[in-house]
Image (cartoon, rainbow, N blue to C red; front, side):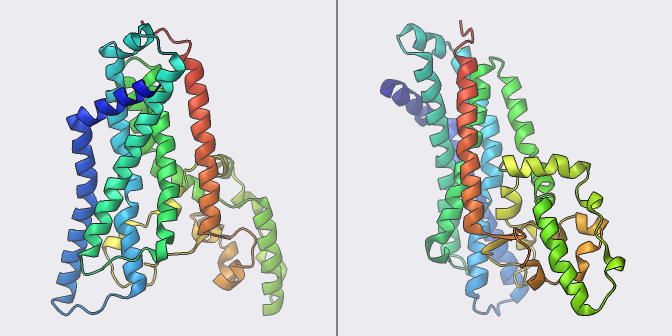
Length: 343
């Protein structure tokens, strides 16, 4: 097993493409810092004021968190092509004839590609922190708490790398794993929007009705004029999106990675490094379909159980799902690989 790992890491070390991709990942956040610095200098026209700590913290997060969008796409292209060479060059066949077990071959491939995924993430984050440190914005990692968020996102990326490696090991045709992996990554945005839109559940809506009734009574309004139509909330989309939210990490990009408005404005109140995440229909597209939530203010929404969760809670939930999916990908992948004809 040790010899196989040495061989896999040596191949990655000797691969020019693997180093080029590490360089690209390091270059992307540097370009983002340069672009935003130029926007900032132009907007202030040489009259730059002091960057507020909250803005510095937020921009630091912007410069380092976008690895979650770029690294999976790089892995979707690199891993299937790299692992696919094992079949083309006969590496897997030679490993088996050399006395190594299929489990050892499978595991060494998974570990080495997961480690490479981590290396890409570290290159992006490290370059982002360094570039931010020498920019006008500075670096603020929130006393180290930011690294916990990054670790949760990296664990999710590792789970993705395991999936791509499994696909490449069980499918000999190099093009098919690439296509499947790219389609998987391209679905991130749609799946994320779908899952976070329908993050709420029946218990949350019941609690919402309770809070809302108290507000209506306090305002002296007629409750019959403000009935909640549950069918608008628990429709066909909910029965698809909610399981996706509960069972997968599809919502992580939406909940953790800032939107592109971060590159447009440097003073908006919405540009903040949040310590909680909203998961209620009020901030989803459902609020366009129905005006049920409009009567409540944010302070009342906080009284609804589950409408807001701390980032720590979200991290724990996503970490558990990442570990579970790594186990699922590994177990199912090995079950197929051990029966596959590799000769």
